[in-house]
Amino acid sequence: MDKALINGSADPVSGEHMPAGYRELARDGLIYELPGIDHYPQMEAPNAVTRYYLEFLGPLTRRC
Image (cartoon, rainbow, N blue to C red; front, top):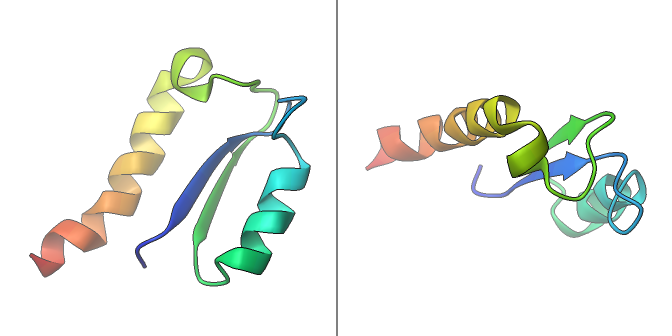
C-alpha cells in the first residue's frame, strides 16, 4: 500500500466528504479519519497524525 489520507473530519473545506472522493481515486489507499479535528490535523492532533503516519510507513520501510 503506497497511498494514505489522514483527514480532519471537522474541516469545512476538506472534511467529511474528502474520504469518499479519495476512495474513488485511490481504491486501495488507507484512510485515517480524525473526528472533531479541523484543517490542521498535524497541529490539532499531532500524536494521532504521527501514529498513523508511522503505521503507514511501517510496511514501506520493511520492503526497502
